[in-house]
Each structure stands twice: as C-alpha cells, then as structure tokens.
Length: 373
View 1 (spheres, rainbow, N blue to C red):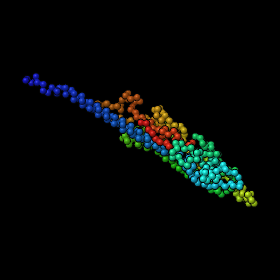
View 2: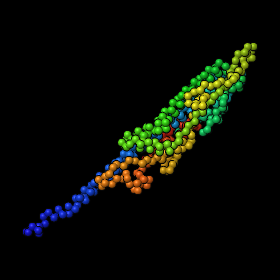
View 3: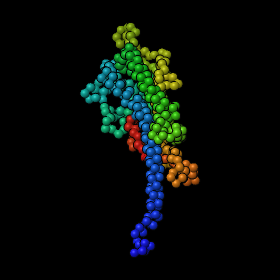
View 4: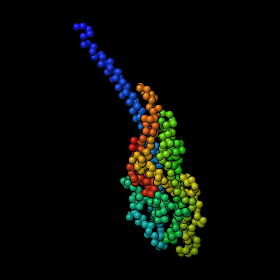
C-alpha cells in the first residue's frame, strides 16, 4: 500500500489538537484549586480569630456573673446561716427565721439579706447545676439593685436601728460583720477589676492583638490585614461596662451604757457614717458592689444582626495570590468584585444559644461562643 494511503498514525492529528486543550484544562483546574485553597485558608484564619476573640468576652461575662451573684451569696450564707440572731424575751424577729426546717431559728444571714447586703436565690435552692436560670437577687432594702440599671443606697445600712431594738445584737459583733463585709466586697472588686483589665488589654487597648496575631499568623499576609480585621471588630462592637460602688456605710448595735436591767444596753449608731475606703474596680472611688454590662453590648454579641444570624457580623477583604498561569491578576480587577475586592464573612455570637445567660439581674454564667461561618 502506498504511504499516503496508509491509516497508520492518523490519531496524531486529533491528538495534536486534544492534548493542548487537555493541558489547558488541567492548568485551569490547578489554578482554580490554588485560588480555592487560599480562600479556605483565609476563611479558616478569620473564623479561628473571631472565635478566640469572642471567647475573651464570654469568659469576662461569665466571671462577672459569678462576682455579682454566686460568690457573695456563698460567702455570706455559709458564714452566717447558722449564726443565731438572738431576740428571745426582747422582741419578735420571726421574720428572720432560717429557711432550713432543721434549724428554723432566726439567723444573721436572713438579717443581712433583708437589709440588702448580699444577694441570694429567691427559691432558696442551694445549688444551680441543673438550672437554666439562676434566680439570684437582693432582698428588702436592696431591692433597688434588682434591675439592669441598679440603684444602690448611699450610705448602705448594714444593721438597722430596729435590728438593735428587737434583739441582743451587740455593737462589737456589728463591727466585726462590717469588717468582713468590707473585706469581701473589696476582694470582689479586686477580682472584677483584674478581669476587666485583662479583657481590655487583650481587646481594645491592644487593638485586639490576639485577633490580629491569630489571623495573620495563619495566613502569612501582611500585618496590616490583621489591623483591618481589628478595625472591623471595633466598628461592630462597642463594649461598655459600669462598676457600681458605695462611699458610706451605717450600722447599729447595742452598747453597754451602765444602769440596771435591760437598760444597761442602748442602741448606738455609727455617727458620722463610716467612709468606706476605695477599692479596685471603682474608678470614681468607693467600695465595689457589682458590675453591670451595657445591654446594647450584650445585644450586639447575641441578637440577630444584618446576616440574619445572632451575633457580630464581620467581613474582611483578603489578599489574593499574584498572577496565575493565564496572566490574570485578580488583585487588580476591582470591577470583578462587589466591593472592589474579594471579601470573607463570618458571624460569631456570645450567649445566643442560652437566652438565660445574664450578668445582672439573675446572674447566670452560661455565656458560650457559637459561630456561623
């Protein structure tokens, strides 16, 4: 057979057309995968950074809830629940009866609670492990504290004149209780102030250093991209807290004045009122009592936002790789993107999965971080 009539090698001609097309297709897949890998890497870095940053806020909110409620409740109840308030033969103090049926005698814990000195559970339950909501509040004279914007009387009355009238409540004991009261709330103020200083240094004061480092260390981008992320966080959240403090305190107690019979003791009062030393956590001076967080700040961290998901809606323009195999530089094609550059989005919430998580009132330390990438 003549060579020009032979069919051998005829596959070469379509192969010369097919193989270049196939290689172009392979390169297209490769460049697409490279672009997708970069986007996934940046999205992961953004999600991780937001989660780490939100955890700082959830930790602060949970610890503040403990300082406002559970800590003072445990200290005063355990310290004075079995300490009798003696009034037999002098007056009727059944209103201060112990809630424990095994020991119904009036006690100092009940007196202090009704005088508004410390908070406790309305239901009287000793534990909260299985409770979605901790019903901790102030009683009696302290009822003004049981609101998102608490009002604290100044001076605080540790023991009233009636307490001394209706019982054998001694002056020296009242003074000892005052000393413990100051030590407890001074300590709580120190704890809360330390927590607040840590939160500020990790977030706003350092321009969200953890957020920035977590982002750009996972991407290798210039540090300026972490600064952009921090600015985006600041624009989405203005976190505000308010410490509540008191400057003066009054207490009453029975003092020995001589004479005969019951007239040997008379009710005395601190006069003038005791000036309470300044404690940490009170920028304007006074003794720390509690810390509240602006409801708008909590709403920003937990209520549905523009994304439809609860929490902070965050966005960030990210760094595209350089020119690809096809010599296309996406970084210099703003017309291809809605906002002039590719953007990443994430939403992070604190407390949205448990609406009963609160700082005050009903301080319930169940703030958790949840993310919607």
